[in-house]
Length: 539
Image 1: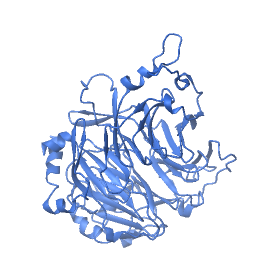
Image 2: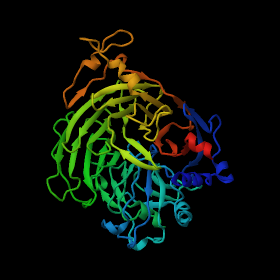
Image 3: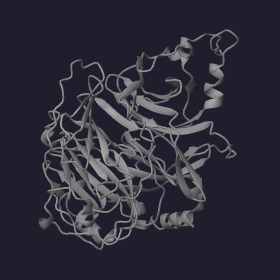
Image 4: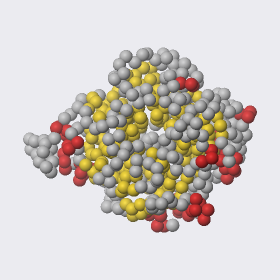
């Protein structure tokens, strides 16, 4: 039984040594309560402090969850890093979505990672250094071709390093560390549908971008990133504008998008030479959306989207890749039809920048097998106004907003594994669970009871509220492609969190939901895994 295996694996993860290592800071509890029960702290992951190099300043930690299946046979020799090759790794296994960004990508526990002990001593005991302009040569790297790599991994950035940790190992420290000598990694993404070895993207604050094979990094016991394809080398495409967010295009066959602080997004094809020169027309109006395509078929990137003046802070694709959401320094959410390269709608925050966005999708668990189902009805945003907002694709406007944060909202994620305790399992889901961080807040959104009654219109009238007031927010219909101002804050239905909990000493920067657990990560790179109530009690 898959679930039994997961629980059995988790049972063996806490030992006397790991429990002492995971001792809580004063004032922090090892559980938090929700309406469905207690989420209990199971164990922690972090980075070895001795391997950090803060010469280039700190960066906010982000986490990507990646799942590798069995290594295909026959295995192929490690490819030279001087050129991209499909034989450099193996066909990537699917990584389930984490809500993000998106960001992306949720996974349950799937058992211990095969062979992880064979590389932990060499890769975690020393830092793997790589210059920001290149990767190692195959002649100078050692590989463990017998290492299968099967398992579930956490990929996270701290300072100038990328760390890879075995999610199902009792070891608190990572099994691999890769340091960049001249810049810091700031964003990364794992491809759930990669058709060759290169399944992991890494964006740097120098504007440089790498694609690599995750399995190849785990197989290599040397000190360098191996088999990397390099894009926007030394910021040649965009004058070294920092990367802020990166995403594979779902079903895009190796196409990915990188967002930058200059308000531009660039579209790349991973199978094209990353050193190819691309030139684009000059942006005539910094405040207007525009798309420019590369002049030559061999160019990479293949397109530039100018989205806004100022930084694009986060991007997220709908599950089917039809729509792309962006949020930026100018405070706007923008939703684009990706294939048509057209703006569908946009809306503004009440104050300051929007920092994060996430799409709603649904995961059905049938006979303990997970199946992703297209939803895409709602989008979450959060930012500097301390609010979490729920946007409707159908209505093209805000339909609810959450008040409860006392600081900026740095990430928002739908919990696609959660179902209402009162749900009978039939019909359309009318309640959504989602989470947001600065501090950890969980929200339950009942669409029928909260949004729909507030939108009912009396005969010949406008929507009536409990105060008896009338609202132009629900009357107004904005044309396609329109950026909307922020509505009157009194006209948008309010929701309150069902959980508000301080789980780390430092502010949180990330949140991930899996079938078995909730993962929280703070800005300093410390990760905690909280088991869901049903799983926690069974142990």
